[in-house]
Length: 216
Image (cartoon, rainbow, N blue to C red; front, side):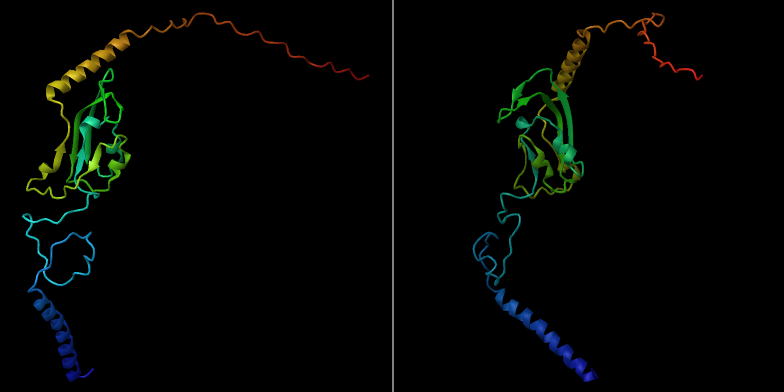
């Protein structure tokens, strides 16, 4: 391409881009209605500005999405499945076993383990949703709370346990006493025979040997 041809091509391409910018410039004088992405003909309303003054104005988010985790601790059986399946280890659980059933969940599942600690570090969460899938009582869910930004990363660690330090120590002591009483009440094993005690050996049967005739 010649020198003048390059100049002509530059002007044509510049005008093509400016034409599009000028078109949007005049369209920006009007605003369009703020609607959710699920509304009918949402993608057909492409003209006009659409600025949301966040956080004073917010667009509704879908109810079924992968956002902040929440655990309904009263329905939690502390099975530890969510912590095991988590690929980033953002769930920290400290269980305390109970000597007996102390309650039941909303679906009738018996409670046998106390949750001394149930923390979720949302700064590590990858929002895969695996923990909510394996939960047998469906107490672990993802809410529609998507904005939990903060200046301190430690604020992303959410604790769901309702037990106090005194209750934790009492439950631990109660289970330790139960274990000790269980060992004490265990029947003694029969005494092992002494090493010098003779053990009767089974009689050895004689081996039959066929009689081979002598050669003459």
